[in-house]
Amino acid sequence: MTEYKANGVVGDYLVYKDKPLVRKDNMFCYGDMKDDYVLFLMVLTTKTVEVGGEAGKEIPDHILVQIMSTDESKSPSERLAKQFEKNGLYDAIDIGLIWLDKLNRK
Image 1 (cartoon, helix red, strand yellow):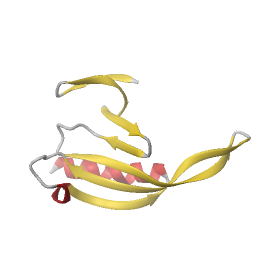
Image 2 (cartoon, one colour):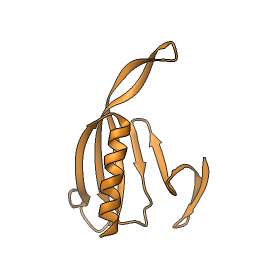
Image 3 (tube, rainbow, N blue to C red):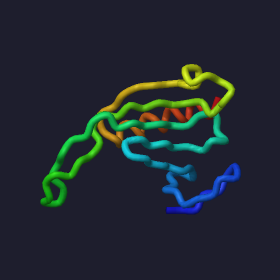
Image 4 (cartoon, rainbow, N blue to C red):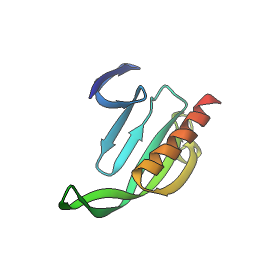
């Protein structure tokens, strides 16, 4: 955990590539609200796997990825810039970050 300070928001967040990654239940949010877009990930399904000899560990399986505009003057439907689904959290974050970087550079 790293203390993150931006736009008057101060807190201890997991920081990845200098931006906060916040998790609440099955939802993840990555990005800085001062950027034009942020990344939302929703875990739709999980699967049970054996990890280190222990059975019954649940990991994210099917992920809905949304890249949303931070412009609050737009309606919620207009704020959705890109949406897709991926299998596995790694693939979802990997592709999501590529699109997020591309959209934030415009």
